[in-house]
Length: 198
Length: 199
Image (cartoon, rainbow over all chains, first blue to last red; front, side, top):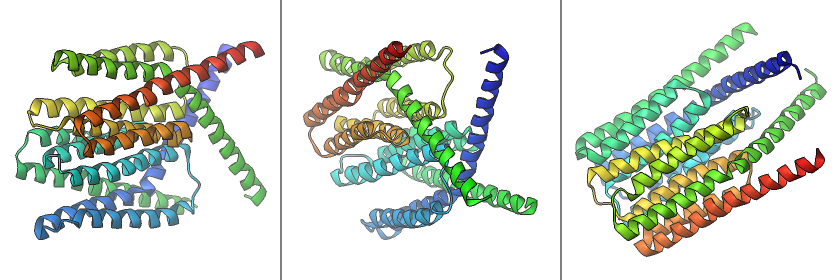
């Protein structure tokens, strides 16, 4: 194969990758409501526990959020074919979901962990999932969220109880609710543009 | 677009995905050496810590292994174009490495007493996330089996004694890192020899 042909093939490959990344990010934006849903679920569980000292607040909220996610996801995914990058990103979150649903109840029941170390571990795991997805989609806003989670992971190891709790709630607000709303706005703007071009 | 054309496009898309999955699985098999290197590194760090009780056993071994991984990566990657599946899997393992390199030193330096079996549970869970995500992307049942083993170690570590947790972790390391890596080696070598005989 000549050098020119090689260069052309490489360019084709690069443009295919670029278009796949853009498509993956668009798919991800369509799922932005999941971030908002889980952000609200986390805040609800934290407030419920703090105000009512109800021991089953976390399991009830998490299970309800899972069921709601599955129901809405099943309705949404039936309408559109999945992309390769979309599959890759969803695999990260599925793996994270299974792991979190297994580790945190086990840690809670065993009672062998400090609650701030638990926040640190949860933040590190969230940082991992956000970063993997951000590297994959080359999405700076999402990588910034990963940095927020990692910073919280370190801070939770050293900070005092009230500031750590405030930092945790702020991270949930920023990286789940605000980030999710940002994704939803980006998606609606794109679908409006699509409708006006049609 | 007609129904037939749409069906053809969908078939093309499916074919492309299948090709990418096979290509990605092949790439993972060719990275078998990394699994083996990390498997051995865990044993070295563990043995060093048990024998000398040195607080530097884990950090030094992990940093050296990370450097070794970078060298192997740089040599292997030379000239080979990256695939989308390869990038996806690479991003998962990269993110896991950064998280571990942030979390564990922070816990260690903070001086908070954390049960060693809980630390094992956390490591096993993080390894479970990466292994499971990678297996779902590659639709690889064997690798998903490894993820199930890591999750089991995590649960055992939360409830068992330190001894039970260590035994479970070391056994999982042998199975999911060393044996899985060697299996990848064998698959790759078999493919290379088949390729040579077809040439």
